[in-house]
Image (tube, rainbow, N blue to C red; front, side, top):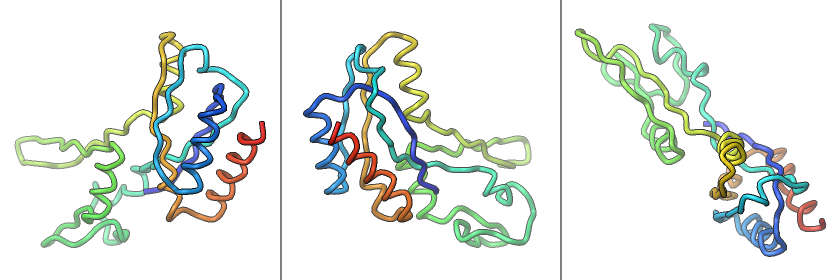
Length: 159
């Protein structure tokens, strides 16, 4: 699974800014709550989230010979490895089997809405918004991803 940085613009309180900095430094998860009037603002926050590109796993549905490291042999077939499957479940992704008379033929991927999609919905319905900001995802991410979030947190803290 890949790490994706989603950008949201909200209004952050001083306490939220401090909590974000501490969570970033300790690579922890924090819960952020925004009242309706804080859903739009000038504070830009980069939110790391896991993404799963089904196109990369097209071979899972076809009879190709080459499988990525996310798949392991199981008899004459290949299945998702335990680590990939566990990571998908932990991040809200679900594989839904499509079953016909001959048994399972393929899978559909349920992808949870991103933080951006949930924020847009909260704005549309004029409601409050809460989400988990998970900086622990940065532990195994690329240097450029960590650097981008570091710069973003520094900018937020100084604003």
